[in-house]
Length: 238
Ligand SMILES: [Fe+2]
Image 1 (cartoon, rainbow, N blue to C red):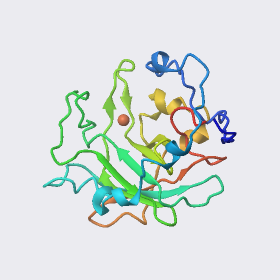
Image 2: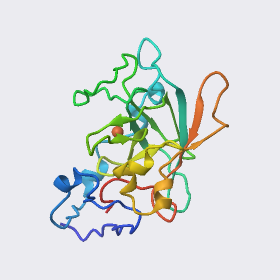
Image 3: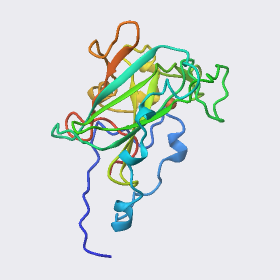
Image 4: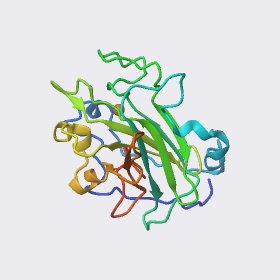
C-alpha cells in the first residue's frame, strides 16, 4: 500500500438522506450496521473500464426512438448542465437514466402491477456531457407507480439518474422529479432528505425555451456535485 492520500468528503448534514429512515421501510433491512470502510482506489480502479464518448451512440439520449413505433405518453425533453461546487461545467461525464413508462410501469421482470407495458418504450438512455457540461434526453413523462411501502403508497413521477466520473468506481445516483407533483408530501424517499431546500433541488423546472410547438414539453434540471447548491445523491458520498 502506498502513502496515497485519498480525498474524503464528510457527510453533508441536512442534505444527505440518512441510510436508515423509518418511513422508507426497506432501509431498515439494508442499511449498513457497521461504520463504513473507505476502500482505497488504486491505479486499477481509477483507470478502467473506460467510460464515455466512444461507447455512447448519437441516438442513445432519445428514449422515444428505440423501437419501431413511438411510445405512448407525453413527449418531453429533460436538459441541463452538470456542474461542480463552484459552478464549473463538467465535460465528458457519462449520464445514464432509467424510468417507468407513461403508465408508471418499468420494463423489468420484478415490476408486475396492473399497468400496461409499452412495446415501444424500454425506459433507459444515456449521453455524455458536452464541453459546457450540457446533457439532454428526449423521453416520455413517466407515470406514478405504487410500491407497497405503506397503504396506498405511490411514488411521485421521477427519472433515475446515474453519473459516472472518470472510472467505474466514481458513480453517483439520484432521482429527478417534476414540478407540482401532488405525491411529494407522502413520499418517504423524497422526504428522507432532511433539508426542504435540498429536496426542492431534486425537482426540475418547466422550461419554455426547450418546449417546442406541437412536439414536446421542456424541463430543465442542473446537477451540482457538491456545495451549497449541491444535488442530493443516494447513499454515502465519501
Ligand atoms: Fe423508480
